[in-house]
Length: 169
Ligand code: NI
Image (cartoon, rainbow, N blue to C red; front, side, top):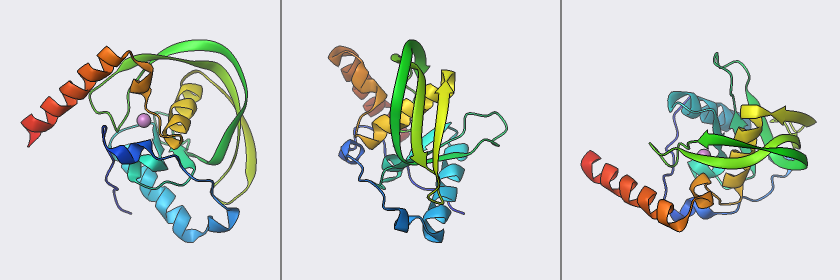
């Protein structure tokens, strides 16, 4: 097991649109990579990690919103097939450290995807899990949660992170 480096805003690689995965790619090496992504996410710590964030531009993500790290979910080629309602949730992102902001998302979604073995599944999600799925799916489109903020607020975020990096260097 190994921890993977996480790309941070404003790294342009986070803007890459992920490509669909062919089921033939879901081999042992892929599953080992998925394990590393879970370890990286738990270590951070976070509740979701899209492949884009570890500079892998294939369409998949890992999520575990449980407290005990026992609800691992892998979504390969995820697709939202229905949405209902709205919720506002304060979000953060491992690629945008120390920043939190309110984002409006669908309250309930139904998502279809493959698991890490290529088995199709459908999941109805609401609350935090629904938020997390929508947030990670945005990453696969090269989109970050701070893109929903006003340009002014986004600039503030950029400056805050630059300052943070300078003081860490
Ligand atoms: Ni994120």
